[in-house]
Amino acid sequence: MKGKDYLLMLLFGGLLLWGITYFASIQPETETPEQVQQPESKLPKDALEFEASQIFGEPRETKSVREREVTVEGVGTFPFDPADIQTVRPDIFRPGHFSLFDVLHHLYQQELVDLTYSFDESMNTHVIGRLNGEEYWWYDAYYDGGWPESSVFRMDHYPYKDGMFLAFKPLSADRLGSIERIFREEVARREANDGNVIIPEVIIRGRNETLRFDQVEVTAHDLRDDMLQPGVITAIDVILSLGDAGKIRYDLKWYESIGTADIVKSYWVERINDDTAYDRCGFVYEAGSDVFRFFRGNHVHIPSDVRVLNSPEYVEYFWICI
Image 1 (tube, rainbow, N blue to C red):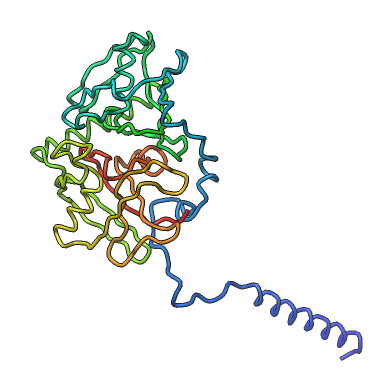
Image 2 (image 1 turned 90 degrees about the vertical axis):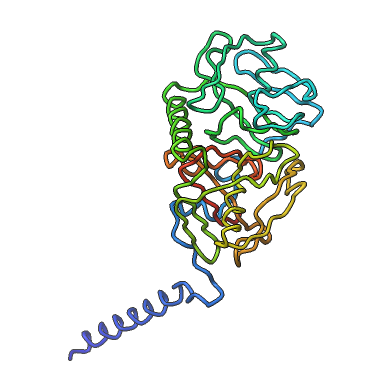
């Protein structure tokens, strides 16, 4: 071998050895037994761990509970006294409690807005015909410490709570039509089950395990009989019903406040089987139709103990760290 060829071979070999050593040094560490893989999810990967502000923006400053007000887009902002409001859904709310629609209805009673509306039994909800002459209205709402979010939850089921942001705004006819179609499907599903709430799919996607249950019958446990009428079924009843059937073990915890949210006052699912909330990790949930999964409208920050269910296509509790 010529001297020149020999030197080139040494140089190439040195570069090859350096490359192997370098790339080996930047490979991820081997997973230790303590590291737990997240179960497969229908949600985007970045939904498992995120900073809320990355998706929603920073939470807006919440109004003082002494400044209870509602905005009707294009009309104005109106203060109101909760003591003056009566619910149009006494089948859902106990006296002294009311929904977002009840606030709008109160403005109508005070002749502050021109409202036509009706109750549609096929959807089990009140429907706005016209508001100040315009059709197709929906709402923006979030609780203390929250942020704007897409919601397809019935406005006469959504409990009003002090410190929340509330505004009514126009919505496209197509979007509203899609929401109302889902409402009708839920009512038809419940009627097909003789008035019982039987959920086709319940998923619990915890830190250490994923559980799926089909055709889960849910019964009322009246956990929030301070706010809701006896027999009203909520999302947290799904967990309690699975517990009654011996399918899971769980713990609940009452929170007066959480982080920047000064007004919470609800029960949360603290543990399911061996997965217990800690630090900023724990269970959240969503319920509704597959059409509106995740942040398309089902994942709304209404505590599960006051989120009234009709007969959704699925309910999912999943583990998240924020």
